Each structure stands twice: as structure tokens, then as C-alpha cells.
Length: 126
Image 1 (cartoon, rainbow, N blue to C red):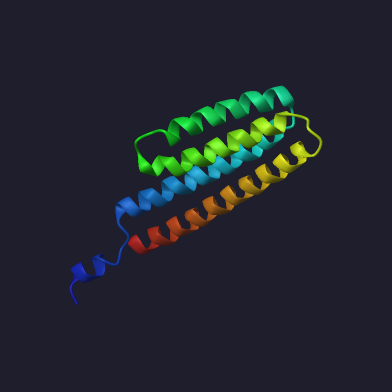
Image 2 (cartoon, helix red, strand yellow):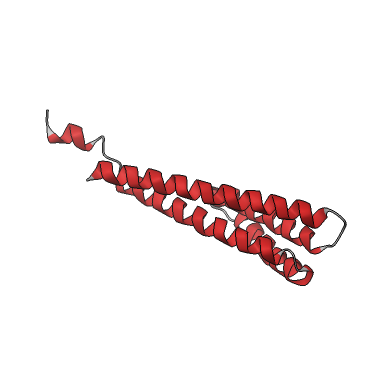
């Protein structure tokens, strides 16, 4: 068996870079969402932060790159949820707090998953 056949089973450098980039993105995004959840409890900060997040999401959503559209849609939705949490309408802040908590935990779990996949692929390479 030649070495060339074994090299094809190794993950590519592009794949490793993509896994690493996604892991960092999800971990940082989950941490930021967790912090935004606490900001969402304060009406003025929630509306301001939500508007900024929504504007960034809309910018990514309207970009020409199709890979940014999913992220833009998620950010726009999160921004809208944060804006809604700023309004003290009976149970709305509680619902938005729960939704933001679930989103932050989900992003952190995805980040850890991507990080584990990255380390597994990295060990296959060397």
C-alpha cells in the first residue's frame, strides 16, 4: 500500500480551519448571548442592544454571501427577541429570557461539539 492512499483519509487543512472557525464562532456567540440575556432585563439597554444586533443581522442577511444569510437571519431574530424583552408587557420578558437562555446553551453545546470534532480530525491528521 502506498502512502498516497493513506493521505486521502486525512482531513484537509480547509476542513480543519472550517471546524476551528465554527467552534470559535459558536462558543463566542453562546457567551455573548448569555451576556445579552442579562442585558435584556434592563429596558433601555435591551432596546439599544437589540437594535444593534438586529442591524448587524440585517446587514449579514442582505449580504451577497449565501453562507452569511443563515447567521444574519439568526442575529436578526435574536435582536428582535432582545428588543421585545425591553418592553415590560406582563410575561414577555420571562419568555424572552427563557428563549435567550435556550439559544445560548444551544450555541455553547454546538461550539463544544465542533471543538471536539476539530480535535478528533486534528489527531487523524498527525
